Amino acid sequence: MVSLKVLSLLTLLGITTAQNATLRYMPFGDSITEITCWRSLLWEKLQTTEWASVNFVGSGKNENNCKDTKYDRDNEGHSGFLAIDIANKNQLDGWLKTNPADVITMHLGTNDFVQQNKPVADVITAFTKLVGTMRTHNPKMKIVVAQIIPMGIGSYNTKIQQLNAQIPTWAAGLNKTESPIWVVDQYTGFSGSSDLRDGVHPNASGDQKMMNVWYPGLLMALAAAKADQGTTTAVKFIA
Image (cartoon, rainbow, N blue to C red):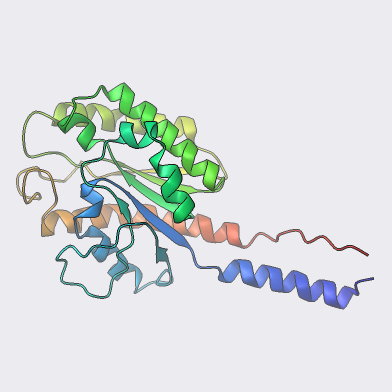
């Protein structure tokens, strides 16, 4: 027989452990996530808040000449990767098995248009599969999806604008109370001429703009993930 005193203590310990668990955040995308500096700016800004202990996760760990030796470099950005390929090859499944996450941000679709001129509908289909993979690994995954930045080369912005226009309705259709999707607009206010260093990747001003847009969406996702940790887990006792 388990006394009420012991039961209460075990329950309290369970709650305390859950509330103190470190939140895991995966920045997920292509080279615009991997070889840029908005992640270092985002990490630095979080250090001044209650979210300073958030653990960035992912297989990527390279430093990108961001002049910041302190920031948590872990991310799941993959240069040159298409959203369609990541979905069709089930690559996110392996990445999340290795690096589980509570919160994920996603900026994808650029390479689908630049490299292979894929239809917007195919990219949206890939996004749907990727969200399903996220939720398979964590049914309470908090997801922040970007309307992606413009390009400064070629005529790719037509399809980028079409994709961005569809993302809010797509996200609303997949939104769940336990696994919400927030949409952030990385396109509006971002200059394809002055905020890119090479026509594709953000320069210093572009990194700052991306961080500024990610930040409020990430805070909402982190707050929701923290609220989940306050849920008491049932404990079974055998008499």
